[in-house]
Length: 132
Image: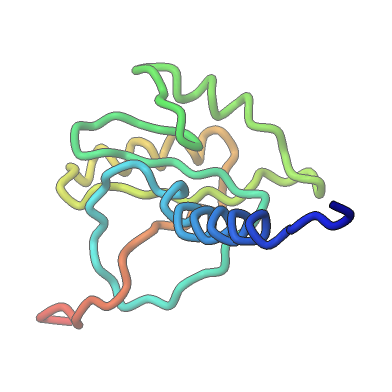
């Protein structure tokens, strides 16, 4: 036999490609956080950003890794600056059931560590709040 039939190989590769295309977006957000709604416009994602998440039970995760209690300042100090020498953008995801003081305390630690550009993440499609 002088020919190799590559049709089954192509079929398998297309199925694997479809599986990876479907599962890749699911890998990005693995922390269950109920974000507040807002009518703000979406910002573009930046490669040089860090993601900080505050869950409903009060745990903190920095780029998907859990931060032990009291070690947030050390972890923030270990974040390298961007190529321009400035600290990277911080995207803060906080569960809407959290106490406002807890979120402000984390933002204070970010400010103290030199992070001045903080984006608060919300879900889109919210209605205009009453009284505004």
